[in-house]
Image 1 (cartoon, rainbow, N blue to C red):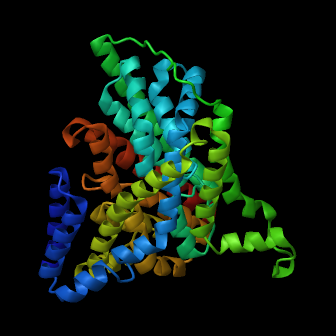
Image 2: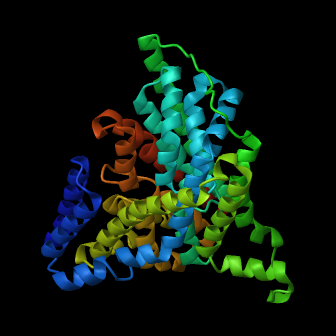
Length: 450
């Protein structure tokens, strides 16, 4: 009983420190110490092995996914400096209209994240343009934050098949599937998340503008931008490179017979390296096509590499906290309770991942912990691997966005907002809507596969 109370106390402390703006690395270490002391763990082993270097250790995770974070951050920096994001967003404004600025922000973030840009980098890249859009359109800043969260941290992160997101890669790496696993389920979930989130944001926009009588007076920037078709080519190159092994098809006779098949076999076996390679190709194409990158591209690459460090470390330390949690008796009790529950396996799976992601404040952290500690038990229950892949990734994107989530803290910090001002909108579009969409997708999976 003390062990379970200790876990709850550590989680409460982690959330409280996050709300007060305590550095997430410090908060994770303090919360880990609470877990260690209340669960009678050996402090030396817990901190130097379980937290840092164990199977779920912070630096084990950081080392494994370093290339993906690095290439994603560099690609994002190049797309920002090359004004590809601005050109794409302005084209969307012309197509959708200034009064749909929240749609523009959401879809711009979605294009970037689906193109492989790390969520943290997207926030930095899109914020200046998003701020300009909402100021001209008379939309409150809190809804801008909600739109960024919806576009960057929901359906492209967990639901859309083919995404090079870290979450999709974790599942593919653990289960031996590919990034397109569970495509139909993912598409359904993505549509539900986007439509549900936008329904809420647009309803809030209309309410605000009726109450304040603000009007839409959007004007395009006079800054020279590349053509939107040129701007989307690097992102399309990333997606097509990731898709290419799928287009080659199965290898005849089980053995590769030519270089396309050999590359396809290599790509399928490298769920981390291949998306990283795709991001490198996209970066090189961006340098070639975008005029603003033809001078000083190496400096932009260097700044992009620097911007990868903090997102990687922030994600890694919450996983390190989870690594300590998973060694406790309280976590073992939780795992057994989930597996022995009377819930259908897919519902039990979704609940388990959501709770773990909530504990560590990270979808990728919760998913990594689940894959390492509980996934095999669910495989043995007979869940098809493609279904397990897609539902588990979608389920990770629910309670992960509690107030101590590193991405939420970073987004509020970058946009100059507080939890009190903007967290309600973030919670609706990143917790409530994704959980409901995941439940609906599970119902579809149960109907189709049972």
